[in-house]
Image 1 (cartoon, rainbow, N blue to C red):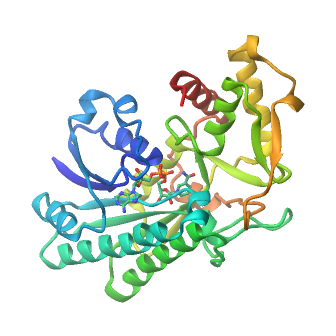
Image 2: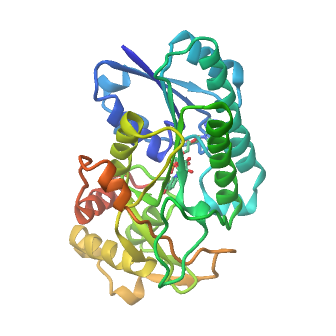
Length: 331
Ligand SMILES: NC(=O)c1ccc[n+]([C@@H]2O[C@H](COP(=O)([O-])OP(=O)(O)OC[C@H]3O[C@@H](n4cnc5c(N)ncnc54)[C@H](O)[C@@H]3O)[C@@H](O)[C@H]2O)c1
Protein backbone atom coordinates (compact mmCIF):
# COMPACT_ATOMS: atom_id res chain seq x y z
CA UNK A 1 0.00 0.00 0.00
CA UNK A 2 1.14 3.53 -0.83
CA UNK A 3 -0.08 6.08 1.72
CA UNK A 4 -1.12 9.53 0.52
CA UNK A 5 -2.31 12.57 2.50
CA UNK A 6 -5.07 14.84 1.16
CA UNK A 7 -6.25 17.97 2.98
CA UNK A 8 -9.73 19.38 2.39
CA UNK A 9 -10.98 16.05 1.05
CA UNK A 10 -14.54 16.62 2.24
CA UNK A 11 -14.87 19.77 0.09
CA UNK A 12 -16.18 19.95 -3.46
CA UNK A 13 -12.92 19.29 -5.34
CA UNK A 14 -11.51 17.14 -2.52
CA UNK A 15 -14.34 14.60 -2.74
CA UNK A 16 -13.81 14.20 -6.51
CA UNK A 17 -10.04 13.88 -5.94
CA UNK A 18 -10.59 11.19 -3.29
CA UNK A 19 -12.95 9.36 -5.63
CA UNK A 20 -10.40 9.55 -8.44
CA UNK A 21 -7.28 8.56 -6.48
CA UNK A 22 -8.99 5.74 -4.56
CA UNK A 23 -9.81 3.88 -7.80
CA UNK A 24 -6.29 2.47 -7.39
CA UNK A 25 -6.52 -0.47 -4.94
CA UNK A 26 -2.86 -0.05 -3.93
CA UNK A 27 -3.43 3.41 -2.49
CA UNK A 28 -4.57 4.26 1.03
CA UNK A 29 -5.61 7.88 1.59
CA UNK A 30 -5.52 9.89 4.80
CA UNK A 31 -7.73 12.96 4.68
CA UNK A 32 -7.71 15.92 7.09
CA UNK A 33 -10.76 18.19 6.93
CA UNK A 34 -12.32 20.29 9.69
CA UNK A 35 -15.70 20.25 7.91
CA UNK A 36 -15.86 24.03 8.17
CA UNK A 37 -18.68 24.22 5.59
CA UNK A 38 -20.75 21.75 7.60
CA UNK A 39 -21.79 19.69 4.55
CA UNK A 40 -20.07 17.14 2.35
CA UNK A 41 -21.17 14.81 -0.44
CA UNK A 42 -18.41 12.29 0.38
CA UNK A 43 -20.76 9.41 1.20
CA UNK A 44 -22.93 9.86 -1.89
CA UNK A 45 -20.16 10.52 -4.41
CA UNK A 46 -17.41 8.07 -3.35
CA UNK A 47 -18.33 4.37 -3.78
CA UNK A 48 -18.27 2.28 -0.57
CA UNK A 49 -15.43 -0.03 -1.65
CA UNK A 50 -13.24 3.03 -2.22
CA UNK A 51 -14.31 4.69 1.04
CA UNK A 52 -12.88 1.67 2.85
CA UNK A 53 -9.40 2.83 1.76
CA UNK A 54 -9.85 6.41 2.95
CA UNK A 55 -9.43 7.48 6.57
CA UNK A 56 -10.78 10.92 7.44
CA UNK A 57 -9.62 12.93 10.44
CA UNK A 58 -12.12 15.67 11.31
CA UNK A 59 -9.53 18.19 12.43
CA UNK A 60 -7.70 21.35 11.51
CA UNK A 61 -4.56 21.46 9.36
CA UNK A 62 -3.18 23.86 11.97
CA UNK A 63 -3.00 20.89 14.36
CA UNK A 64 0.69 20.22 13.79
CA UNK A 65 0.84 17.21 16.12
CA UNK A 66 -1.82 15.47 14.05
CA UNK A 67 -0.19 16.37 10.71
CA UNK A 68 3.21 15.13 11.95
CA UNK A 69 1.78 11.89 13.33
CA UNK A 70 -0.04 11.05 10.07
CA UNK A 71 3.06 11.76 7.99
CA UNK A 72 5.38 9.75 10.26
CA UNK A 73 3.15 6.78 11.13
CA UNK A 74 2.20 6.11 7.51
CA UNK A 75 5.41 7.13 5.76
CA UNK A 76 3.40 9.47 3.53
CA UNK A 77 5.13 10.27 0.23
CA UNK A 78 2.55 12.47 -1.52
CA UNK A 79 0.49 15.35 -0.12
CA UNK A 80 -2.34 17.03 -2.04
CA UNK A 81 -3.07 20.26 -0.15
CA UNK A 82 -6.59 21.54 -0.91
CA UNK A 83 -7.90 22.58 2.52
CA UNK A 84 -8.84 26.24 2.43
CA UNK A 85 -11.63 28.62 3.14
CA UNK A 86 -12.82 29.12 -0.43
CA UNK A 87 -15.92 31.33 -0.67
CA UNK A 88 -15.06 34.84 -1.86
CA UNK A 89 -18.25 36.41 -0.45
CA UNK A 90 -17.55 34.91 2.98
CA UNK A 91 -14.01 36.32 2.83
CA UNK A 92 -15.46 39.80 2.36
CA UNK A 93 -17.77 39.49 5.38
CA UNK A 94 -15.15 37.76 7.59
CA UNK A 95 -11.54 37.67 6.35
CA UNK A 96 -9.79 36.36 9.48
CA UNK A 97 -10.74 32.69 9.09
CA UNK A 98 -9.31 32.84 5.54
CA UNK A 99 -5.88 33.93 6.74
CA UNK A 100 -5.91 31.38 9.58
CA UNK A 101 -6.73 28.41 7.34
CA UNK A 102 -5.19 29.43 4.02
CA UNK A 103 -2.01 31.14 5.21
CA UNK A 104 -1.21 29.72 8.65
CA UNK A 105 -2.69 26.36 7.67
CA UNK A 106 -0.40 26.14 4.64
CA UNK A 107 2.60 27.15 6.76
CA UNK A 108 1.66 24.45 9.25
CA UNK A 109 1.49 21.84 6.46
CA UNK A 110 4.85 22.90 5.02
CA UNK A 111 6.57 22.87 8.42
CA UNK A 112 5.12 19.44 9.22
CA UNK A 113 6.25 18.05 5.85
CA UNK A 114 9.74 19.58 6.01
CA UNK A 115 10.18 18.10 9.45
CA UNK A 116 8.99 14.72 8.15
CA UNK A 117 11.54 14.84 5.30
CA UNK A 118 14.35 15.79 7.73
CA UNK A 119 13.39 12.90 10.03
CA UNK A 120 13.98 10.42 7.20
CA UNK A 121 10.83 10.58 5.03
CA UNK A 122 10.89 8.96 1.60
CA UNK A 123 13.24 10.38 -1.05
CA UNK A 124 10.37 10.63 -3.52
CA UNK A 125 8.26 12.85 -1.21
CA UNK A 126 6.20 15.46 -3.14
CA UNK A 127 3.74 18.16 -2.14
CA UNK A 128 1.07 19.61 -4.44
CA UNK A 129 -0.48 22.93 -3.42
CA UNK A 130 -3.85 23.61 -5.08
CA UNK A 131 -4.43 27.32 -5.66
CA UNK A 132 -6.51 29.60 -7.83
CA UNK A 133 -6.15 31.85 -10.88
CA UNK A 134 -7.77 34.58 -8.76
CA UNK A 135 -4.29 35.34 -7.33
CA UNK A 136 -3.49 37.05 -10.67
CA UNK A 137 -6.33 39.60 -10.33
CA UNK A 138 -8.59 40.18 -13.31
CA UNK A 139 -8.31 40.81 -17.06
CA UNK A 140 -9.81 43.32 -19.47
CA UNK A 141 -11.79 41.95 -22.46
CA UNK A 142 -8.80 42.09 -24.84
CA UNK A 143 -6.01 41.10 -22.42
CA UNK A 144 -4.09 37.89 -23.11
CA UNK A 145 -5.03 35.06 -20.73
CA UNK A 146 -3.08 34.29 -17.54
CA UNK A 147 0.05 32.19 -17.97
CA UNK A 148 2.78 30.82 -15.69
CA UNK A 149 4.57 34.20 -15.95
CA UNK A 150 1.59 36.36 -14.89
CA UNK A 151 2.23 38.52 -11.84
CA UNK A 152 0.17 38.42 -8.65
CA UNK A 153 -2.56 41.06 -8.11
CA UNK A 154 -5.13 39.57 -5.70
CA UNK A 155 -8.38 41.52 -5.28
CA UNK A 156 -10.29 39.90 -2.39
CA UNK A 157 -9.30 38.64 1.07
CA UNK A 158 -9.74 35.12 -0.37
CA UNK A 159 -7.35 35.64 -3.28
CA UNK A 160 -4.90 37.55 -1.05
CA UNK A 161 -4.80 34.61 1.37
CA UNK A 162 -4.27 32.15 -1.50
CA UNK A 163 -1.52 34.37 -2.96
CA UNK A 164 0.23 34.36 0.43
CA UNK A 165 -0.05 30.57 0.56
CA UNK A 166 1.49 30.28 -2.93
CA UNK A 167 4.44 32.40 -1.79
CA UNK A 168 4.93 30.19 1.28
CA UNK A 169 5.26 27.21 -1.07
CA UNK A 170 7.46 28.92 -3.67
CA UNK A 171 9.82 30.41 -1.08
CA UNK A 172 10.04 27.08 0.76
CA UNK A 173 11.16 25.44 -2.46
CA UNK A 174 13.72 28.16 -3.17
CA UNK A 175 15.09 28.40 0.37
CA UNK A 176 14.84 24.84 1.67
CA UNK A 177 14.49 22.77 -1.52
CA UNK A 178 10.99 21.77 -0.40
CA UNK A 179 9.72 19.45 -3.19
CA UNK A 180 6.47 21.25 -3.93
CA UNK A 181 4.48 22.30 -6.97
CA UNK A 182 1.69 24.90 -7.21
CA UNK A 183 -1.39 24.66 -9.42
CA UNK A 184 -3.60 27.66 -10.19
CA UNK A 185 -6.93 26.68 -11.68
CA UNK A 186 -9.98 28.48 -12.97
CA UNK A 187 -13.60 28.13 -11.75
CA UNK A 188 -14.49 24.50 -11.19
CA UNK A 189 -17.94 23.05 -11.66
CA UNK A 190 -19.41 19.60 -11.22
CA UNK A 191 -21.58 17.44 -8.97
CA UNK A 192 -21.35 18.17 -5.25
CA UNK A 193 -20.44 21.86 -5.27
CA UNK A 194 -21.65 23.86 -2.27
CA UNK A 195 -25.14 25.33 -2.73
CA UNK A 196 -23.84 28.91 -2.26
CA UNK A 197 -21.78 28.77 -5.49
CA UNK A 198 -23.00 30.14 -8.83
CA UNK A 199 -24.01 26.97 -10.72
CA UNK A 200 -25.88 25.33 -7.80
CA UNK A 201 -27.57 28.70 -7.16
CA UNK A 202 -28.73 28.88 -10.78
CA UNK A 203 -30.11 25.32 -10.80
CA UNK A 204 -31.72 25.57 -7.38
CA UNK A 205 -33.34 28.93 -8.21
CA UNK A 206 -34.81 27.47 -11.41
CA UNK A 207 -36.11 24.41 -9.56
CA UNK A 208 -37.65 26.51 -6.78
CA UNK A 209 -38.96 29.07 -9.29
CA UNK A 210 -37.01 31.88 -7.59
CA UNK A 211 -35.27 34.59 -9.62
CA UNK A 212 -31.58 33.81 -10.14
CA UNK A 213 -29.53 36.61 -8.49
CA UNK A 214 -26.89 37.87 -10.96
CA UNK A 215 -24.19 40.27 -9.80
CA UNK A 216 -23.88 43.61 -11.66
CA UNK A 217 -24.71 43.28 -15.34
CA UNK A 218 -23.97 39.57 -15.75
CA UNK A 219 -21.09 40.38 -18.11
CA UNK A 220 -18.30 39.09 -15.84
CA UNK A 221 -16.41 36.30 -17.60
CA UNK A 222 -15.26 33.07 -15.97
CA UNK A 223 -13.38 30.15 -17.47
CA UNK A 224 -15.18 26.92 -16.48
CA UNK A 225 -13.20 23.79 -15.68
CA UNK A 226 -14.94 20.45 -15.06
CA UNK A 227 -13.82 19.15 -11.67
CA UNK A 228 -13.00 15.66 -12.99
CA UNK A 229 -10.67 17.11 -15.61
CA UNK A 230 -9.06 19.18 -12.86
CA UNK A 231 -8.39 16.21 -10.55
CA UNK A 232 -6.99 14.16 -13.46
CA UNK A 233 -4.49 16.99 -14.06
CA UNK A 234 -3.63 17.11 -10.35
CA UNK A 235 -2.74 13.42 -10.40
CA UNK A 236 -0.65 13.86 -13.58
CA UNK A 237 1.20 16.87 -12.12
CA UNK A 238 1.87 15.02 -8.87
CA UNK A 239 3.36 12.15 -10.89
CA UNK A 240 5.42 14.08 -13.44
CA UNK A 241 5.48 17.80 -12.59
CA UNK A 242 8.73 19.50 -11.59
CA UNK A 243 9.12 20.78 -8.01
CA UNK A 244 9.35 24.57 -7.87
CA UNK A 245 7.05 24.97 -10.89
CA UNK A 246 3.56 26.43 -11.13
CA UNK A 247 1.00 24.87 -13.48
CA UNK A 248 -2.09 26.74 -14.67
CA UNK A 249 -5.17 24.57 -15.22
CA UNK A 250 -8.07 25.99 -17.23
CA UNK A 251 -11.13 24.65 -19.00
CA UNK A 252 -10.83 26.63 -22.29
CA UNK A 253 -14.45 27.64 -21.73
CA UNK A 254 -14.83 31.38 -21.18
CA UNK A 255 -18.46 32.38 -20.62
CA UNK A 256 -20.18 35.47 -19.27
CA UNK A 257 -22.35 34.70 -16.27
CA UNK A 258 -25.42 35.39 -18.42
CA UNK A 259 -24.23 32.92 -21.10
CA UNK A 260 -23.83 30.33 -18.40
CA UNK A 261 -27.36 30.99 -17.12
CA UNK A 262 -28.69 30.57 -20.68
CA UNK A 263 -26.96 27.19 -21.11
CA UNK A 264 -28.27 25.89 -17.78
CA UNK A 265 -31.74 27.26 -18.54
CA UNK A 266 -31.77 25.22 -21.76
CA UNK A 267 -30.83 21.99 -19.96
CA UNK A 268 -33.35 22.72 -17.19
CA UNK A 269 -36.17 23.23 -19.71
CA UNK A 270 -35.40 19.81 -21.23
CA UNK A 271 -35.42 18.18 -17.78
CA UNK A 272 -38.45 20.00 -16.35
CA UNK A 273 -40.59 21.17 -19.32
CA UNK A 274 -43.55 21.78 -16.98
CA UNK A 275 -41.49 24.48 -15.18
CA UNK A 276 -40.07 26.11 -18.34
CA UNK A 277 -40.12 29.93 -18.36
CA UNK A 278 -38.92 32.61 -20.79
CA UNK A 279 -35.25 33.52 -20.35
CA UNK A 280 -35.93 37.15 -19.38
CA UNK A 281 -38.17 36.01 -16.51
CA UNK A 282 -35.69 33.78 -14.70
CA UNK A 283 -33.06 36.18 -13.31
CA UNK A 284 -32.65 39.57 -11.63
CA UNK A 285 -29.57 41.76 -11.34
CA UNK A 286 -28.34 42.42 -7.79
CA UNK A 287 -25.70 44.89 -6.54
CA UNK A 288 -22.26 43.88 -7.62
CA UNK A 289 -19.80 42.11 -5.31
CA UNK A 290 -17.21 44.50 -3.82
CA UNK A 291 -13.97 44.37 -5.85
CA UNK A 292 -15.62 41.97 -8.35
CA UNK A 293 -13.08 40.69 -10.91
CA UNK A 294 -14.26 41.19 -14.50
CA UNK A 295 -12.64 38.36 -16.37
CA UNK A 296 -10.42 35.34 -15.75
CA UNK A 297 -8.88 33.29 -18.55
CA UNK A 298 -6.05 30.79 -18.68
CA UNK A 299 -3.57 29.91 -21.41
CA UNK A 300 -3.58 26.09 -21.29
CA UNK A 301 -0.98 25.48 -24.02
CA UNK A 302 1.87 24.67 -21.64
CA UNK A 303 -0.36 22.38 -19.58
CA UNK A 304 -1.57 20.46 -22.64
CA UNK A 305 1.95 20.08 -24.03
CA UNK A 306 3.32 18.77 -20.70
CA UNK A 307 0.39 16.45 -19.95
CA UNK A 308 -1.10 15.46 -23.32
CA UNK A 309 -2.66 12.26 -21.98
CA UNK A 310 -5.15 13.88 -19.65
CA UNK A 311 -8.54 13.44 -21.30
CA UNK A 312 -10.95 16.37 -21.26
CA UNK A 313 -14.65 15.80 -20.65
CA UNK A 314 -17.10 17.40 -23.09
CA UNK A 315 -18.37 20.67 -21.53
CA UNK A 316 -22.07 20.22 -22.30
CA UNK A 317 -22.13 16.64 -21.03
CA UNK A 318 -20.37 17.75 -17.84
CA UNK A 319 -22.84 20.61 -17.39
CA UNK A 320 -25.78 18.23 -17.87
CA UNK A 321 -24.35 15.85 -15.26
CA UNK A 322 -23.96 18.79 -12.87
CA UNK A 323 -27.50 20.09 -13.42
CA UNK A 324 -28.87 16.57 -12.94
CA UNK A 325 -26.97 16.20 -9.67
CA UNK A 326 -28.35 19.43 -8.23
CA UNK A 327 -31.89 18.66 -9.38
CA UNK A 328 -31.68 15.22 -7.73
CA UNK A 329 -30.13 16.50 -4.52
CA UNK A 330 -32.44 19.41 -3.85
CA UNK A 331 -29.81 21.44 -2.03
N1 LIG B 1 -13.87 25.55 -6.53
C1 LIG B 1 -13.15 26.27 -7.36
O1 LIG B 1 -13.66 26.73 -8.39
C2 LIG B 1 -11.70 26.53 -7.09
C3 LIG B 1 -10.98 27.27 -8.05
C4 LIG B 1 -9.63 27.51 -7.84
C5 LIG B 1 -9.00 27.00 -6.71
N2 LIG B 1 -9.70 26.30 -5.78
C6 LIG B 1 -8.98 25.80 -4.60
O2 LIG B 1 -9.20 24.41 -4.50
C7 LIG B 1 -9.25 24.01 -3.14
C8 LIG B 1 -10.54 23.25 -2.87
O3 LIG B 1 -11.64 24.09 -3.25
P1 LIG B 1 -13.15 23.60 -3.08
O4 LIG B 1 -13.95 24.31 -4.10
O5 LIG B 1 -13.21 22.14 -2.98
O6 LIG B 1 -13.48 24.27 -1.68
P2 LIG B 1 -14.44 23.78 -0.54
O7 LIG B 1 -14.69 24.97 0.31
O8 LIG B 1 -15.61 23.04 -1.10
O9 LIG B 1 -13.54 22.73 0.25
C9 LIG B 1 -12.48 23.10 1.09
C10 LIG B 1 -12.41 22.09 2.23
O10 LIG B 1 -11.34 22.49 3.10
C11 LIG B 1 -11.77 22.31 4.44
N3 LIG B 1 -11.03 23.23 5.30
C12 LIG B 1 -11.05 24.59 5.30
N4 LIG B 1 -10.23 25.08 6.24
C13 LIG B 1 -9.67 23.99 6.86
C14 LIG B 1 -8.74 23.85 7.91
N5 LIG B 1 -8.20 24.91 8.56
N6 LIG B 1 -8.37 22.60 8.30
C15 LIG B 1 -8.91 21.51 7.68
N7 LIG B 1 -9.80 21.59 6.66
C16 LIG B 1 -10.17 22.82 6.26
C17 LIG B 1 -13.26 22.61 4.42
O11 LIG B 1 -13.93 22.00 5.51
C18 LIG B 1 -13.70 22.07 3.07
O12 LIG B 1 -14.18 20.74 3.18
C19 LIG B 1 -9.12 25.28 -2.31
O13 LIG B 1 -7.78 25.39 -1.90
C20 LIG B 1 -9.47 26.40 -3.29
O14 LIG B 1 -8.80 27.59 -2.97
C21 LIG B 1 -11.04 26.06 -5.94
